[in-house]
Length: 378
View 1 (cartoon, rainbow, N blue to C red):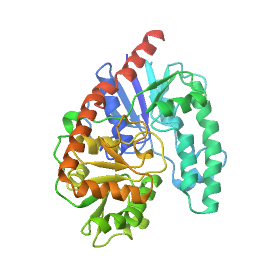
View 2 (cartoon, helix red, strand yellow; view 1 turned 180 degrees about the horizontal axis):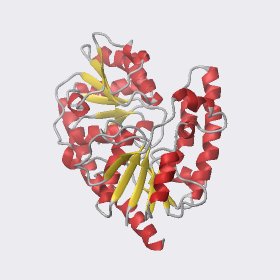
View 3 (tube, rainbow, N blue to C red; view 1 turned 90 degrees about the horizontal axis):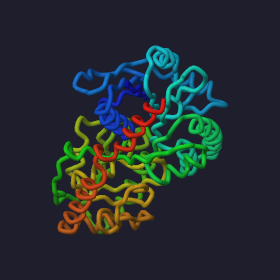
């Protein structure tokens, strides 16, 4: 039994939520059977990993993808899957897992059970981008992207043998799109790799994210321009730090005495631990937030919109504090910054929830069992 996993990029280094989910689920699957992880783009040395990692070409240039994406979703147009196709035909893989809909090998001749690991519901992602877009032309563009994406995603989820979703809500949406079978594997944390530290007595607020992802940019801007000034009315020396790779000019221009933009860091978690609270003003996107789980595991108190913790079994007021408006988010964050005892109580409750419910070794079991079942049924 050998499983082939297809991904759009190497999960190493694990600097984004997409990469972390791919990495940890592939590691867990490798405990059952040999796994070959094939990706687009460059790959680092992975001799210490339990799976084989190879590069099978690259994504298409942006302009080329845009010119061919009038009737095809942009993410699909970016994929040059010729070497993937050759790899699929090269060996009698037991099962195949694709890390996004654009990588699912459709058409005759595949002949193996296929699982889609749906990190997001891509149709809902496109619709959420449309909602947060300021400019009418771009809103129209994302509306058309949502139409294309729904058509393609519906065809894919109906064709595969099973879909792995990150939450019950995503699972219901995928079933509505036509998925015949869905298993739920939430995002998680490798608890043994993230030590708990009580929150410091710091008046810094933090946001962590990959800023090549538009909802993270919108959330970071809201944090700096909307939430931070309101926090500073209660905590005058409060500052903010935006941690993550690829910050665009819209974020770089926010830098100043009270705002730090770090760019990509070798150890983003170490930088996050210096903050008294992380604020998650997310209002768009899909899936569940690894940044929230990692902060909870590490001991950093979390203040979030309800959307930012969608799919997580948190209890507001115990493991996290929630707010809808910028004023509510600011009030919640300030209440943590000025009350160290409350911050530590929240942090310890959050850590316990992650230990009990969100360790990758436990969460991955339904996916591992799914591949074993499909292998037997083949």
